[in-house]
Image (tube, rainbow, N blue to C red):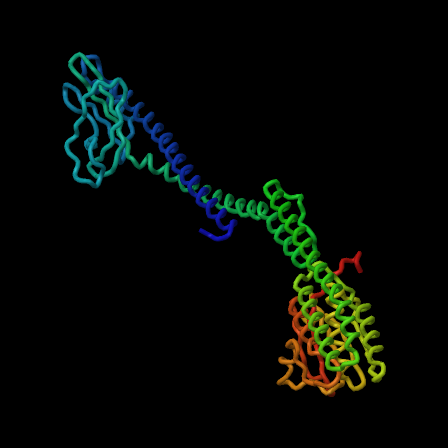
Length: 452
């Protein structure tokens, strides 16, 4: 049994069509055989009536009348007639052997029984002639003053089989064409009937990707309940997502003041201040992970203004060192990310680059080659760079290659986790001319003409 609904329905339809056509063919063949046989019986009955007209009330055969009417009797291979009466038998020289026993090929036929019965109408008999050909016969028994007279007329079975075969060949061809048309109609019907399921599947995928918020409930009656349940499930998921994000924000807000107060209280103690700063970075890291774990697939952020704002903010933070932050965004792309997630990702990349840059940091955003559904964020600096052997290790939480200066080793880890959460990855490479180039792939949101 096929695993798909369409395959199962096609299989069941094929079986039903073949069974229906087989029954129809059998029934039509039976009707045709009966019609052809009745036509031959009428011809044989006409011969029997002609033979009966030559027998008088005493069972004598008028030979002159029989000779005069012999031309009207069927003649040829397989056609026979016979009169049996008190004065003997008259008829074809090769009168067929008729019996009610086995069919041809099951043994040699016995002597003709020429059954005597009280039937008022002609009796149907089957038999074979001396050449072994199957014959179909009609026999009538007349009662006369001197005894019974049996009249027999027989026709070759081929006169029934031949027109039947000639009719069945085009009939079977027509049934085969009908089967093909029914199969084609079934396929079209299944495609049209299952099309709403395909549309619903596409809408569910769009909800998962964030392009829709619910499926269309204007569905066939059988699918309306499913559409309503899917919309309820999507609404529950959105509510749970909003609750989780709000809980993460509330926790961040609740911890912000106590940590800031603690930092102020130990600012004169560098060792303790460093530990408090590390605690603050760790809290922000894990809150970022918690917030990212509830990513909103429907969120979107315009990239150009977000990049410009972050470039200005990072440039001001490091203005004392003379770090210049430049940016270039191709077109007006939209990232399929929450604005806070995008700022967290790009902000950590820029801050890490600015802290290690010698004079400049550059940001470039463009569509990913070969995949317009994703954007490449490229942040490069002219600092010392990271050795190839350490590039995988440096993206782990708490890992720092340079213990001098600020930082707690969580920036690149946050970038990596946010990138992976959105189906991308963080790649570190050597910048042309020296330094580090960080490349992150993020999902792009397709804009409709009205949104653009």
